[in-house]
Amino acid sequence: MNSKEYMERTEQAVLHTYNRFPVVFEKGEGVYLTDVEGKKYLDFGAGIAVFALGYGNREYEDALKSQIEKIIHTSNLYYNVPLMEAAEKLVKASGMDKVFFTNSGTEAIEGAIKAARKYAYLKDGRTDHEIIAMNHSFHGRSIGALSVTGNPHYQEAFRPLMGGVRFADFNDLESVKAQVTERTCAIILETVQGEGGIYPADPEFLEGIRTLCDEKDILLILDEIQCGMGRTGSWFAWQQYGVKPDIMTCAKALGCGVPVGAFVLNEKTAESSLVPGDHGTTYGGNPLACAAVSKVFDLFEELDLVQHVREVAPYLEQKLDGLVQKYEFLSGRRGKGLMQGLVVTGRPVGEIVKKSLDNGLIVISAGSDVIRFVPPLIITKEDIDEMIERLEQSF
Image 1 (cartoon, rainbow, N blue to C red):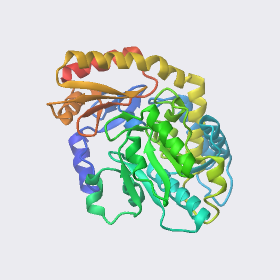
Image 2: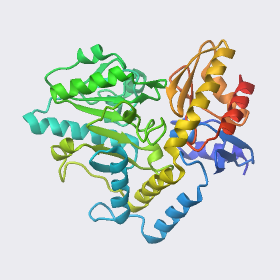
Image 3: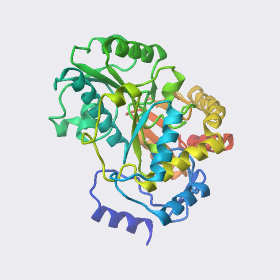
Image 4: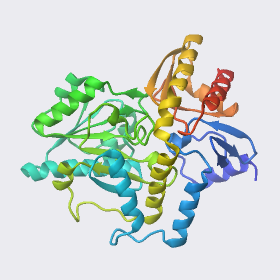
């Protein structure tokens, strides 16, 4: 079949909730994807910040094959070896204490919300606690995650949502303080806002939030689903701020393609929140997903990927800054590490993304006016040069 036939048959069978680009990918190698027609694409989207290791990493694939030959699933009624290994490595990288593995980032958010509410319930027995979230945030599309997503466009058709959520402005500490009440049990935010337009937290803002939480025994939940796992130049972006959350959510590059997420708790929260019967999942923490997580951590260490990001990211920033100086319709760059965005004014971002795809370059959008760059973490300066060349052709 050709691409057109694949797409037509897909639309006949799959619920139309995505306006997919007209390309059918078949395979990948390194930082390139190839479609069913044989055309190659330089990938600076990485499956939305997922494929940190790039495509076709043989050690990663062999680890999955090996686990498949042993056992894929047992349920959480029993222990399994990859669960132990993955949890220990995530605890070590984060410096936190307890892990709950989920199947996705959205599920990690749901678990974090439940843990925060249970923590507050055990303190005072009340069930009317509130959570403060940020405007222009994105945490997922389930009802709970949608309730703390600060974008009315995503919410309107699905109200009423979960109650007890107040919204403040990202990087505006006073607006957060204005939303705090005696019922506030948690503050949730992305360390770097992704879908909202690639906005890193200001150090003073994050430090102020941590101080506020400490003063009032409010839990700080940091969403590292997109910005975590080495993408900004540390295992998790919050580690560059010297601010530690009470609960952290992660996913995407945690499994590098295998669907897996997690929420991670500090000792205080773990000891005074969820207990047996409070939360569960049939597939979460299964041997196959955890074998992927365990191998991802091993390969990050072997390839020294976090240090590689620190070395290559300044070059990407320099090249993107050069584009801002060169083109009037680019008004700025923002981001951290290999999570960068170009702000576009006066031209539709979607048109640039589509033209880039035509030119064999995968970039994605963020918000309404940002070109997002979240490539595999293995990219080189040569890959960046090629990306810039193809992007300028698209301009």
